[in-house]
Length: 373
Image (cartoon, rainbow, N blue to C red; front, side, top):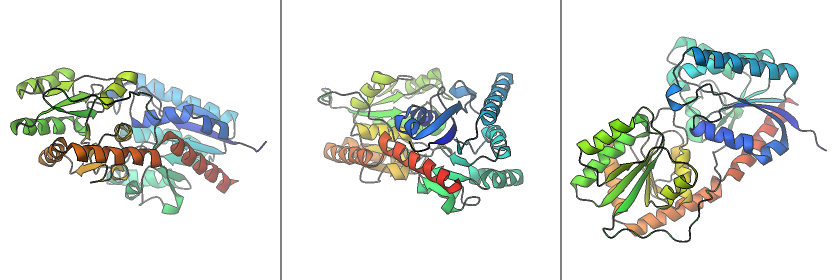
């Protein structure tokens, strides 16, 4: 039997549910990865819900101590061939993760970072961060989700030390034989599916809905996602204030079969994010599985996922008028919706399945191991 590399995976796992933790769960559950390596897993997250992210208190301090203890214990028990960590590079979380990096470097680990966030370039405005990044990236490898993300780290990382591995997701098991017909009024169904955060663009879409209503466009828009820095009361108050009760509906977080039902019953998917740490937009892939045209922004690696004018549209961030215009274009052209949706589904199956992600990450980790062997 061929020798398997010993890999320590230090990654984010839910809760809370977000892109990095979803991908961490997929890695931990991957049969291909677990068959390919002698793998151990440690949860890097010390937040229990979305509102705890980037906030610190005594409970999180003790969770951090426990996390450091777990990493130290693992390193004392076994000599790993590769140490994989989904490092956060912005905000207070960087300094938390840096403590783990210091441990790995003290043990002379073969480190590979897998980034589900960005912010190195912005954080480099501070001299102390520039010094810390030089330390962090020295003699390491990095995995990025897209070539569009390399400029964020290029000051510290030579591209020969970078691997590219687009995210992939499993096929949603939700299946029905036929898409539902429109209601008698012929309303087009719009869907926003993300945590209800300002920077995910929820209010940008709500403002676009106001413009569409003013132009007497027939539609209904469903907002689905866990409440975060936007509260349920605050959002519903905005709906009432703008007399959008017949157009806009907020549902809170939905999962499993309920989640599939929303994608299945929609005509257009809209994700107008301007979140500064957005790297890929996994939710766009979920929409593409269901043959939905996607309207999103050029944030992070999203242009790798959404082909502008082919599988949907990319609009400038926080540009309500441009967003409303593209939504109206798709509402008025069912043939274009269908064509873009089919192109998106084809692109998902060609590039972004979970199997392709697993194969890519497995090959990367084997290459990182071989370079140090």
